Length: 86
Image (cartoon, rainbow, N blue to C red):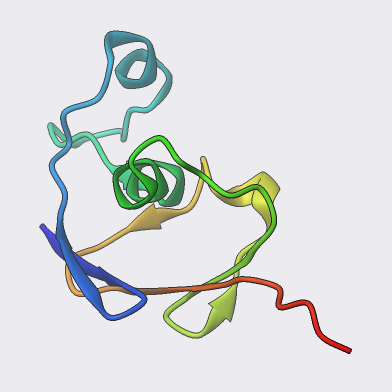
């Protein structure tokens, strides 16, 4: 499945660790969903910055909801970082 994060197209697959897979199942479906936190893990490549805001298709998503908010093909995620200024 392809999504965009900050305009960059990412290809995501539902390959999760066995621990993640056991926590995340959809009734009546054989597919394992992909969540916002899975997309962020791929986007940041283990260099995750801790302070940012996130919008999924223009709607703000709180940090507590990253692991329970599924993403679908062609979704857009915008990550906004704070900028210091004076």
